[in-house]
Length: 526
Image (cartoon, rainbow, N blue to C red; front, side):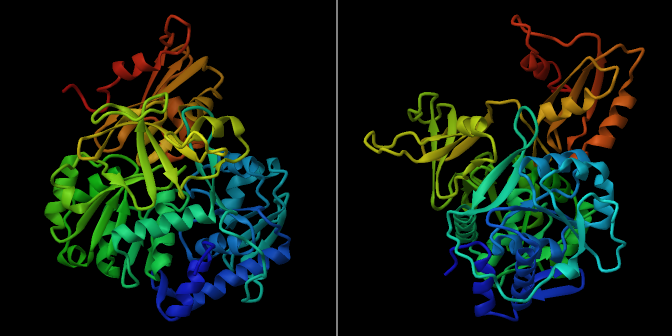
């Protein structure tokens, strides 16, 4: 029985050693081979000096080394930190510094792109470079080692670890400042994998197509859920949406997870019979699926079950809509997943009446340990669960999501909006403050304001207003600067140069007024 996340691989290897665990292009890695590869990484990291709870960051596209590095870090007693491969040097540097990363696993070209950023990471002592034929970047300030030289014996280190220990830190943006590291335990991630696998009815016969980044809890779930039942995972970084459909057909994928912007694109494409026949289910999270998109997918995939879900990194997954309700109430985010309690409460913690708006609060085994190194922000989001007995001396901590929802008389939940100013775009949570900080680096900029506006494909698009002299700065210059310093999903879709940003009577930036003013900038008037 698995108590630690990496033990899922060991259990599957004992049951079906020759079963495929990972597929990448023309290559296949069996569970036995995956177990051995993870063990070699773990023993190699121990020999490198990794101690209990030290962080190992993995900054790679989807490949076998990415998976073995993530799970090998845990098996070595460390904590894995998956870094989105589309991030630029500044965002990567923040993550490495924030959680005092000890080892970075990446490629030679990515290491060189990080450049001087690595010199600003005092805790980082080793950079492991994948690719046997790559020239090692010896100009880095850290010790550099080739991946093949890291690998040790195929035996797991003898370590005393329990399920309450840290397993991973996933970085997620809030409404202000830079991304925060959500600390997840082995218990959190095991409970999440087992819960999701139970309502998706996953078995060893499933083959999941993984197209989402592993730095995204929803993307990482494709690995953990599959490994919990001994299923296989196809690793894929796609360029075009039609490539996803082709991969479904090629690999006979039975499960596919995506976010609304990708589903919007996939729904508009033709699905060949082979792809439609193989898909047993599809899932959506990272934002509400537009009802027309759901209808189009149902028409294209009549024999495929559609699971509409809601989750947050701080608690992995919270709700899902049973498939027999998708046509009945397609706007709903469903009910609590197994082994989770989802409450809708007023600011004082009292439970809301049916159809009364309130904040979604999640309690249970999936609730994370908090934000790495930030007691203040942890205290805002992670608070005692409401409704517990008054005599309980150490109350259970729940996640107060910041999301406004309502529950109907039959118990189904519906998303209303967020309490904070975070922008939900392309399935990502984007911090306005992080975009504003980048824009403010330009000498001509006096102030910047970033906020979200409804977008027909992205959920919300990003609008940036820049306070500057229009004779000294234009929108093309701002966009070029953002393109150099921000990943694609964080780029503003609409930029305006203004002489003065609007403020409320208290002198603060009036984001609410801005959101109303630009509500139709991407959609056009209704």
